[in-house]
Length: 357
Image 1: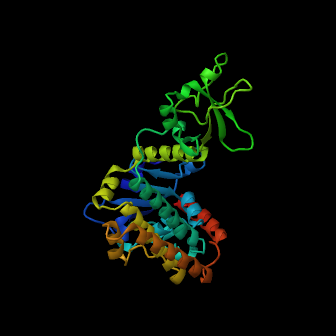
Image 2: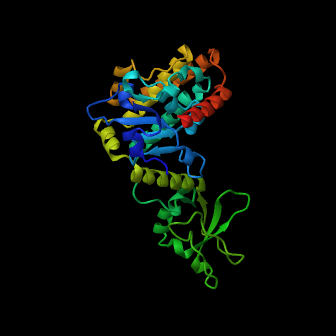
Image 3: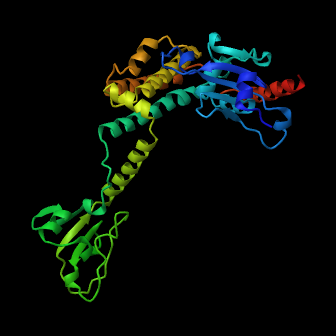
């Protein structure tokens, strides 16, 4: 049976490493900060040779996370930032370290892949921040728009919304029918049921959940009342953004959102702080070939978290920093990629020796 998270954390059964992580390791903790823990464990021999090995064990809130030795090595070989930071944890945050990994140095596995794993991830967070900025600055109405809101008709020499045209002509959308015009994208001839009393028209669209307009069969020789355009692209974008916005509303971290609002900023300040932390760490890796988990730029990073900077200024700085980091890694003497053979040897040696204990 796999050891429980409590057995790993409290009794240190099968542990290779146990560390305080997160804000306290970075030196970015505030009085409100929780204490996070991360570490490495070796699955019991009977479990390892069985079929129920879990490569990661965590508590419900993910404040405590332990990686099985193989998962740790796999992620180390990919220069995963979380794993590299764990291996570079400041001494005052290392609670337990097994003698088998006493000589394990993070510097031995850094490579140019860190440009992507650190700066690339930071770029994705900038994109995420832009998305949040858009959601906060442009809230979406609770009621989704319908196809009819993206339809326009020709009225003399003017183009007006279909809703307006129907109202002015005392007509209903469900009493109309459309015939698609060839060689003209999303253009239709519009007819009314009174023009085709023997053949029922299908209406402009079938309902609020429709993805497209409805097309009807109309007897030949009847002139349309008007021509209609359906901006299908704009409707598709609206539906996607509507779904994304309300999914975000449902799943957002309410405390962090209210913190953002209280700061008067339209971005997630904590997320942006960690974006810059990653960028600064990437620059340090490229320049010095080292990882500094405990931050010397604490004042600047906490300033971001406290909302002291404007969103657009931070985005501009971040984009400039990414460009600099890419140039630095291009010139860096770091290996192109981690030594995977060395990692494979380490994986086998530590497990073999652990099971002999």
